[in-house]
Amino acid sequence: MGGWCHESLMAISHVWIVRPEARSCFFSAPREFTEEKFGQAEKTELDAHFENLLARADSTKNWTEKILRQTEVLLQPNPSARVEEFLYEKLDRKVPSRVTNGELLAQYMADAASELGPTTPYGKTLIKVAEAEKQLGAAERDFIHTASISFLTPLRNFLEGDWKTISKERRLLQNRRLDLDACKARLKKAKAAEAKATCEGDTVPDFQETRPRNYILSASASALWNDEVDKAEQELRVAQTEFDRQAEVTRLLLEGISSTHVNHLRCLHEFVKSQTTYYAQCYRHMLDLQKQLGSSQGAIFPGTFVGTTEPASPPLSSTSPTTAAATMPVVPSVASLAPPGEASLCLEEVAPPASGTRKARVLYDYEAADSSELALLADELITVYSLPGMDPDWLIGERGNKKGKVPVTYLELLS
Image (cartoon, rainbow, N blue to C red):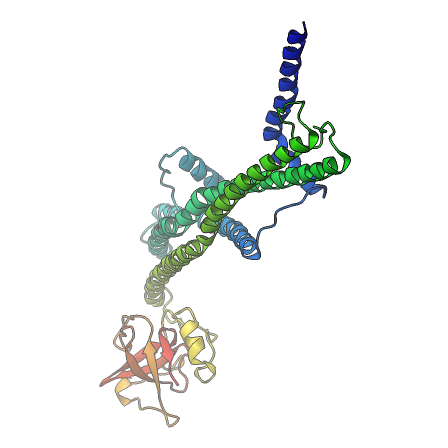
Protein backbone atom coordinates (compact mmCIF):
# COMPACT_ATOMS: atom_id res chain seq x y z
CA MET A 1 0.00 0.00 0.00
CA GLY A 2 2.85 2.29 0.92
CA GLY A 3 4.60 1.46 -2.38
CA TRP A 4 1.46 2.24 -4.30
CA CYS A 5 1.08 5.54 -2.50
CA HIS A 6 4.69 6.39 -3.18
CA GLU A 7 4.30 5.61 -6.90
CA SER A 8 1.04 7.56 -7.03
CA LEU A 9 2.68 10.52 -5.34
CA MET A 10 5.53 10.45 -7.87
CA ALA A 11 3.06 10.25 -10.76
CA ILE A 12 1.04 13.15 -9.43
CA SER A 13 4.17 15.18 -8.81
CA HIS A 14 5.27 14.42 -12.39
CA VAL A 15 1.95 15.72 -13.71
CA TRP A 16 1.95 18.88 -11.65
CA ILE A 17 5.61 19.62 -12.12
CA VAL A 18 6.27 18.79 -15.78
CA ARG A 19 3.02 20.02 -17.29
CA PRO A 20 3.41 23.62 -16.01
CA GLU A 21 6.88 23.53 -17.52
CA ALA A 22 5.40 22.65 -20.91
CA ARG A 23 2.79 25.34 -20.55
CA SER A 24 5.47 27.92 -19.79
CA CYS A 25 7.16 27.19 -23.11
CA PHE A 26 4.00 28.17 -24.96
CA PHE A 27 3.00 31.18 -22.87
CA SER A 28 6.30 32.64 -21.66
CA ALA A 29 6.70 34.99 -24.64
CA PRO A 30 3.15 36.46 -24.56
CA ARG A 31 3.34 36.73 -20.77
CA GLU A 32 6.71 38.45 -20.98
CA PHE A 33 5.38 40.85 -23.62
CA THR A 34 2.38 41.69 -21.41
CA GLU A 35 4.55 42.25 -18.36
CA GLU A 36 6.84 44.52 -20.37
CA LYS A 37 3.86 46.58 -21.51
CA PHE A 38 2.78 47.05 -17.88
CA GLY A 39 6.32 47.80 -16.76
CA GLN A 40 6.57 44.61 -14.69
CA ALA A 41 9.50 43.06 -16.54
CA GLU A 42 12.84 44.15 -17.94
CA LYS A 43 13.25 44.53 -21.67
CA THR A 44 16.42 43.84 -23.66
CA GLU A 45 17.14 47.02 -25.60
CA LEU A 46 18.64 47.02 -29.07
CA ASP A 47 21.62 49.23 -29.81
CA ALA A 48 21.12 52.68 -31.35
CA HIS A 49 22.47 51.63 -34.76
CA PHE A 50 20.01 48.75 -34.92
CA GLU A 51 17.12 51.02 -33.94
CA ASN A 52 18.14 53.46 -36.70
CA LEU A 53 18.13 50.61 -39.22
CA LEU A 54 14.63 49.62 -38.11
CA ALA A 55 13.35 53.20 -38.39
CA ARG A 56 14.95 53.60 -41.83
CA ALA A 57 13.40 50.35 -43.05
CA ASP A 58 9.95 51.35 -41.82
CA SER A 59 10.27 54.76 -43.47
CA THR A 60 11.37 53.17 -46.75
CA LYS A 61 8.42 50.81 -46.70
CA ASN A 62 5.88 53.53 -45.92
CA TRP A 63 7.11 55.95 -48.59
CA THR A 64 7.46 53.20 -51.18
CA GLU A 65 3.80 52.31 -50.64
CA LYS A 66 2.73 55.95 -51.03
CA ILE A 67 4.84 56.50 -54.16
CA LEU A 68 3.57 53.25 -55.67
CA ARG A 69 -0.09 54.10 -55.06
CA GLN A 70 0.20 57.65 -56.40
CA THR A 71 2.13 56.53 -59.48
CA GLU A 72 -0.63 54.03 -60.19
CA VAL A 73 -3.14 56.88 -59.95
CA LEU A 74 -1.01 58.95 -62.33
CA LEU A 75 -0.81 56.19 -64.91
CA GLN A 76 -4.42 55.07 -64.49
CA PRO A 77 -6.74 57.71 -62.96
CA ASN A 78 -9.78 55.41 -63.24
CA PRO A 79 -10.09 53.52 -59.90
CA SER A 80 -12.29 50.81 -61.43
CA ALA A 81 -9.67 50.13 -64.08
CA ARG A 82 -6.99 49.92 -61.38
CA VAL A 83 -9.02 47.37 -59.44
CA GLU A 84 -9.54 45.33 -62.60
CA GLU A 85 -5.81 45.38 -63.37
CA PHE A 86 -5.06 44.35 -59.78
CA LEU A 87 -7.40 41.35 -60.02
CA TYR A 88 -5.91 40.25 -63.33
CA GLU A 89 -2.44 40.51 -61.81
CA LYS A 90 -3.40 38.43 -58.76
CA LEU A 91 -4.99 35.82 -61.01
CA ASP A 92 -1.78 35.78 -63.06
CA ARG A 93 -3.67 36.63 -66.22
CA LYS A 94 -2.81 39.12 -68.93
CA VAL A 95 -4.54 42.46 -68.59
CA PRO A 96 -6.71 43.09 -71.67
CA SER A 97 -5.74 45.99 -73.89
CA ARG A 98 -7.67 49.12 -73.02
CA VAL A 99 -8.36 52.08 -75.33
CA THR A 100 -6.80 55.28 -74.02
CA ASN A 101 -8.78 58.49 -73.67
CA GLY A 102 -6.85 60.05 -76.54
CA GLU A 103 -7.61 57.16 -78.86
CA LEU A 104 -11.29 57.25 -77.89
CA LEU A 105 -11.43 60.99 -78.59
CA ALA A 106 -9.74 60.39 -81.94
CA GLN A 107 -12.38 57.83 -82.84
CA TYR A 108 -15.19 60.23 -81.96
CA MET A 109 -13.63 63.01 -84.02
CA ALA A 110 -13.11 60.74 -87.01
CA ASP A 111 -16.73 59.54 -86.82
CA ALA A 112 -17.93 63.14 -86.53
CA ALA A 113 -15.91 64.15 -89.59
CA SER A 114 -17.31 61.25 -91.55
CA GLU A 115 -20.88 62.23 -90.70
CA LEU A 116 -20.53 66.01 -90.95
CA GLY A 117 -18.55 65.92 -94.17
CA PRO A 118 -14.88 65.05 -94.50
CA THR A 119 -14.42 67.56 -97.32
CA THR A 120 -15.67 70.57 -95.35
CA PRO A 121 -13.16 72.76 -93.52
CA TYR A 122 -14.50 71.56 -90.18
CA GLY A 123 -14.41 67.94 -91.26
CA LYS A 124 -10.85 68.21 -92.59
CA THR A 125 -9.71 69.77 -89.31
CA LEU A 126 -11.46 67.09 -87.29
CA ILE A 127 -9.60 64.43 -89.26
CA LYS A 128 -6.25 66.12 -88.66
CA VAL A 129 -6.88 66.55 -84.94
CA ALA A 130 -8.16 62.96 -84.69
CA GLU A 131 -4.94 61.66 -86.18
CA ALA A 132 -2.91 63.70 -83.69
CA GLU A 133 -5.02 62.50 -80.77
CA LYS A 134 -4.56 58.93 -81.93
CA GLN A 135 -0.80 59.41 -81.91
CA LEU A 136 -1.02 60.94 -78.43
CA GLY A 137 -3.01 57.94 -77.24
CA ALA A 138 -0.42 55.54 -78.64
CA ALA A 139 2.36 57.50 -76.95
CA GLU A 140 0.45 57.37 -73.66
CA ARG A 141 0.05 53.62 -73.98
CA ASP A 142 3.79 53.17 -74.54
CA PHE A 143 4.56 55.40 -71.55
CA ILE A 144 2.24 53.48 -69.23
CA HIS A 145 3.73 50.17 -70.33
CA THR A 146 7.32 51.36 -69.93
CA ALA A 147 6.70 53.03 -66.57
CA SER A 148 4.92 49.94 -65.23
CA ILE A 149 7.83 47.67 -66.09
CA SER A 150 10.73 49.96 -65.18
CA PHE A 151 9.26 51.65 -62.09
CA LEU A 152 6.11 50.09 -60.64
CA THR A 153 7.25 46.47 -60.88
CA PRO A 154 10.48 46.98 -58.87
CA LEU A 155 8.54 48.82 -56.15
CA ARG A 156 5.98 46.01 -55.95
CA ASN A 157 8.74 43.40 -55.86
CA PHE A 158 10.30 45.14 -52.87
CA LEU A 159 7.03 45.33 -50.94
CA GLU A 160 5.90 41.79 -51.79
CA GLY A 161 9.32 40.13 -51.60
CA ASP A 162 12.16 41.78 -49.68
CA TRP A 163 9.92 43.55 -47.19
CA LYS A 164 7.99 40.40 -46.33
CA THR A 165 11.28 38.63 -45.63
CA ILE A 166 12.43 41.49 -43.42
CA SER A 167 9.12 41.49 -41.54
CA LYS A 168 9.32 37.73 -40.96
CA GLU A 169 12.84 37.96 -39.55
CA ARG A 170 11.85 40.91 -37.37
CA ARG A 171 9.01 38.88 -35.86
CA LEU A 172 11.43 36.04 -35.14
CA LEU A 173 13.80 38.50 -33.50
CA GLN A 174 10.95 39.82 -31.36
CA ASN A 175 10.16 36.28 -30.19
CA ARG A 176 13.84 35.58 -29.46
CA ARG A 177 14.04 38.78 -27.43
CA LEU A 178 10.95 37.86 -25.40
CA ASP A 179 12.41 34.39 -24.75
CA LEU A 180 15.68 35.98 -23.65
CA ASP A 181 13.92 38.38 -21.30
CA ALA A 182 11.89 35.49 -19.86
CA CYS A 183 15.10 33.55 -19.18
CA LYS A 184 16.63 36.60 -17.49
CA ALA A 185 13.58 36.99 -15.27
CA ARG A 186 13.62 33.28 -14.43
CA LEU A 187 17.28 33.38 -13.47
CA LYS A 188 16.73 36.47 -11.36
CA LYS A 189 13.90 34.80 -9.43
CA ALA A 190 15.91 31.60 -8.98
CA LYS A 191 18.88 33.48 -7.55
CA ALA A 192 16.63 35.44 -5.21
CA ALA A 193 15.02 32.20 -4.00
CA GLU A 194 18.43 30.56 -3.57
CA ALA A 195 19.66 33.45 -1.47
CA LYS A 196 16.53 33.30 0.65
CA ALA A 197 16.86 29.53 1.14
CA THR A 198 20.50 29.93 2.14
CA CYS A 199 19.56 32.50 4.78
CA GLU A 200 16.55 30.71 6.20
CA GLY A 201 17.88 27.17 6.00
CA ASP A 202 16.41 24.20 4.25
CA THR A 203 12.82 24.80 3.22
CA VAL A 204 10.49 23.31 0.68
CA PRO A 205 10.88 25.28 -2.56
CA ASP A 206 8.01 27.48 -3.69
CA PHE A 207 7.33 26.20 -7.16
CA GLN A 208 5.07 29.18 -7.84
CA GLU A 209 8.03 31.58 -7.89
CA THR A 210 10.01 29.86 -10.60
CA ARG A 211 9.47 27.19 -13.21
CA PRO A 212 8.86 23.82 -11.46
CA ARG A 213 11.17 20.90 -12.05
CA ASN A 214 10.88 17.15 -11.44
CA TYR A 215 13.17 17.14 -8.44
CA ILE A 216 13.59 14.56 -5.74
CA LEU A 217 11.43 15.92 -2.95
CA SER A 218 13.77 14.71 -0.21
CA ALA A 219 16.70 16.90 -1.38
CA SER A 220 17.51 20.04 0.55
CA ALA A 221 15.98 23.33 -0.61
CA SER A 222 19.37 24.94 -1.01
CA ALA A 223 20.58 22.19 -3.33
CA LEU A 224 17.36 22.38 -5.30
CA TRP A 225 17.63 26.12 -5.79
CA ASN A 226 21.30 25.78 -6.74
CA ASP A 227 20.32 23.27 -9.41
CA GLU A 228 17.53 25.59 -10.56
CA VAL A 229 20.00 28.46 -10.93
CA ASP A 230 22.34 26.28 -13.00
CA LYS A 231 19.54 25.27 -15.32
CA ALA A 232 18.30 28.86 -15.64
CA GLU A 233 21.82 30.03 -16.50
CA GLN A 234 22.13 27.31 -19.14
CA GLU A 235 18.79 28.31 -20.68
CA LEU A 236 19.84 31.95 -20.61
CA ARG A 237 23.05 31.15 -22.53
CA VAL A 238 21.04 29.26 -25.17
CA ALA A 239 18.48 32.07 -25.45
CA GLN A 240 21.25 34.69 -25.72
CA THR A 241 22.95 32.72 -28.50
CA GLU A 242 19.69 32.38 -30.47
CA PHE A 243 18.90 36.07 -29.96
CA ASP A 244 22.36 37.17 -31.15
CA ARG A 245 22.15 34.92 -34.20
CA GLN A 246 18.69 36.24 -35.15
CA ALA A 247 19.78 39.83 -34.51
CA GLU A 248 22.68 39.40 -36.93
CA VAL A 249 20.40 37.94 -39.63
CA THR A 250 17.93 40.79 -39.20
CA ARG A 251 20.70 43.39 -39.18
CA LEU A 252 22.09 42.15 -42.50
CA LEU A 253 18.63 42.35 -44.07
CA LEU A 254 18.08 45.86 -42.73
CA GLU A 255 21.43 47.03 -44.03
CA GLY A 256 20.33 45.74 -47.44
CA ILE A 257 17.86 48.64 -47.53
CA SER A 258 20.75 50.73 -48.86
CA SER A 259 20.92 48.46 -51.90
CA THR A 260 17.17 48.85 -52.25
CA HIS A 261 17.58 52.63 -52.36
CA VAL A 262 20.21 52.28 -55.09
CA ASN A 263 17.89 50.06 -57.13
CA HIS A 264 14.95 52.43 -56.65
CA LEU A 265 17.15 55.33 -57.69
CA ARG A 266 17.98 53.59 -60.97
CA CYS A 267 14.28 52.84 -61.51
CA LEU A 268 13.44 56.47 -60.79
CA HIS A 269 15.84 57.58 -63.52
CA GLU A 270 14.17 55.14 -65.90
CA PHE A 271 10.77 56.56 -64.97
CA VAL A 272 11.90 60.13 -65.63
CA LYS A 273 13.43 59.05 -68.93
CA SER A 274 10.20 57.38 -70.07
CA GLN A 275 8.16 60.39 -68.95
CA THR A 276 10.49 62.75 -70.82
CA THR A 277 10.19 60.63 -73.95
CA TYR A 278 6.41 60.64 -73.64
CA TYR A 279 6.11 64.41 -73.30
CA ALA A 280 8.60 64.95 -76.12
CA GLN A 281 6.50 62.75 -78.39
CA CYS A 282 3.36 64.63 -77.37
CA TYR A 283 5.06 67.92 -78.12
CA ARG A 284 6.20 66.80 -81.56
CA HIS A 285 2.75 65.51 -82.47
CA MET A 286 1.06 68.73 -81.36
CA LEU A 287 3.67 70.87 -83.09
CA ASP A 288 3.07 69.03 -86.35
CA LEU A 289 -0.68 69.46 -85.85
CA GLN A 290 -0.23 73.14 -85.14
CA LYS A 291 1.75 73.57 -88.34
CA GLN A 292 -0.92 71.75 -90.34
CA LEU A 293 -3.69 73.85 -88.89
CA GLY A 294 -1.70 77.05 -89.29
CA SER A 295 -0.86 76.39 -92.94
CA SER A 296 -4.49 75.69 -93.75
CA GLN A 297 -5.99 78.48 -91.68
CA GLY A 298 -5.04 81.16 -94.21
CA ALA A 299 -6.94 79.32 -96.94
CA ILE A 300 -9.94 78.84 -94.66
CA PHE A 301 -10.07 82.47 -93.54
CA PRO A 302 -8.49 84.52 -96.34
CA GLY A 303 -7.31 88.01 -95.41
CA THR A 304 -7.08 87.12 -91.72
CA PHE A 305 -3.79 87.65 -89.97
CA VAL A 306 -2.80 84.35 -88.41
CA GLY A 307 -0.61 84.50 -85.35
CA THR A 308 -0.62 85.64 -81.78
CA THR A 309 -2.28 89.01 -81.25
CA GLU A 310 -0.66 89.18 -77.79
CA PRO A 311 2.96 88.23 -77.14
CA ALA A 312 3.07 84.59 -76.05
CA SER A 313 6.38 85.10 -74.27
CA PRO A 314 8.29 88.01 -72.71
CA PRO A 315 10.33 90.29 -74.97
CA LEU A 316 13.78 89.09 -75.89
CA SER A 317 15.49 91.62 -73.66
CA SER A 318 13.77 90.26 -70.55
CA THR A 319 14.18 86.57 -71.37
CA SER A 320 17.06 84.96 -69.53
CA PRO A 321 18.94 81.94 -70.96
CA THR A 322 17.60 79.74 -68.17
CA THR A 323 14.00 80.71 -68.82
CA ALA A 324 14.34 80.20 -72.54
CA ALA A 325 15.86 76.77 -72.08
CA ALA A 326 13.30 75.59 -69.54
CA THR A 327 10.17 76.84 -71.31
CA MET A 328 8.17 74.22 -73.18
CA PRO A 329 8.26 75.36 -76.82
CA VAL A 330 4.98 76.71 -78.16
CA VAL A 331 5.44 77.86 -81.72
CA PRO A 332 2.88 80.16 -83.34
CA SER A 333 1.26 78.69 -86.38
CA VAL A 334 2.44 81.40 -88.77
CA ALA A 335 4.60 84.43 -87.97
CA SER A 336 5.33 87.44 -90.09
CA LEU A 337 8.42 89.60 -90.01
CA ALA A 338 6.39 92.68 -90.79
CA PRO A 339 3.27 93.97 -89.09
CA PRO A 340 -0.05 93.34 -90.83
CA GLY A 341 -0.55 95.38 -93.94
CA GLU A 342 3.18 95.86 -94.66
CA ALA A 343 5.19 94.00 -97.22
CA SER A 344 7.37 91.16 -96.04
CA LEU A 345 10.99 92.02 -95.52
CA CYS A 346 13.57 90.58 -97.87
CA LEU A 347 15.88 88.40 -95.80
CA GLU A 348 18.83 89.18 -98.09
CA GLU A 349 18.47 92.85 -97.24
CA VAL A 350 18.13 92.29 -93.46
CA ALA A 351 21.19 93.40 -91.50
CA PRO A 352 21.95 92.84 -87.82
CA PRO A 353 20.75 95.72 -85.61
CA ALA A 354 23.11 98.19 -84.02
CA SER A 355 22.43 96.63 -80.61
CA GLY A 356 24.37 93.54 -81.72
CA THR A 357 23.71 89.81 -81.92
CA ARG A 358 23.73 86.85 -79.57
CA LYS A 359 24.75 83.24 -79.76
CA ALA A 360 22.17 80.54 -79.20
CA ARG A 361 22.25 76.79 -78.85
CA VAL A 362 19.53 74.82 -80.63
CA LEU A 363 17.52 72.60 -78.27
CA TYR A 364 15.45 70.62 -80.79
CA ASP A 365 15.50 69.82 -84.48
CA TYR A 366 13.28 72.19 -86.45
CA GLU A 367 12.09 71.76 -90.00
CA ALA A 368 11.56 75.02 -91.87
CA ALA A 369 7.94 75.48 -92.95
CA ASP A 370 8.90 77.74 -95.89
CA SER A 371 11.84 79.54 -97.46
CA SER A 372 11.65 82.39 -94.94
CA GLU A 373 12.54 80.06 -92.06
CA LEU A 374 15.89 78.51 -91.16
CA ALA A 375 16.02 74.77 -90.50
CA LEU A 376 17.73 73.82 -87.24
CA LEU A 377 19.60 70.85 -85.87
CA ALA A 378 19.76 70.09 -82.16
CA ASP A 379 22.93 71.21 -80.32
CA GLU A 380 24.23 73.45 -83.10
CA LEU A 381 25.23 77.07 -82.41
CA ILE A 382 23.76 79.92 -84.44
CA THR A 383 23.74 83.71 -84.33
CA VAL A 384 20.41 85.35 -83.57
CA TYR A 385 19.00 88.86 -83.35
CA SER A 386 15.66 90.61 -83.37
CA LEU A 387 14.23 93.32 -85.59
CA PRO A 388 11.72 96.04 -84.75
CA GLY A 389 8.13 94.92 -85.31
CA MET A 390 8.94 91.19 -85.23
CA ASP A 391 6.76 88.71 -83.43
CA PRO A 392 8.51 88.23 -80.06
CA ASP A 393 8.28 84.44 -80.47
CA TRP A 394 10.64 84.58 -83.45
CA LEU A 395 14.20 85.72 -84.15
CA ILE A 396 16.39 86.05 -87.19
CA GLY A 397 18.94 83.25 -87.18
CA GLU A 398 22.17 83.04 -89.15
CA ARG A 399 24.36 80.04 -89.81
CA GLY A 400 27.18 80.71 -92.23
CA ASN A 401 25.65 82.31 -95.31
CA LYS A 402 22.15 81.04 -94.50
CA LYS A 403 19.59 83.23 -92.81
CA GLY A 404 15.96 82.83 -91.78
CA LYS A 405 13.35 83.03 -89.05
CA VAL A 406 13.74 80.69 -86.07
CA PRO A 407 11.39 80.10 -83.09
CA VAL A 408 12.70 81.41 -79.77
CA THR A 409 11.45 78.38 -77.84
CA TYR A 410 13.76 76.10 -79.80
CA LEU A 411 16.80 78.03 -78.57
CA GLU A 412 18.88 78.43 -75.46
CA LEU A 413 20.15 81.98 -75.56
CA LEU A 414 23.75 82.24 -74.42
CA SER A 415 25.27 85.23 -72.68
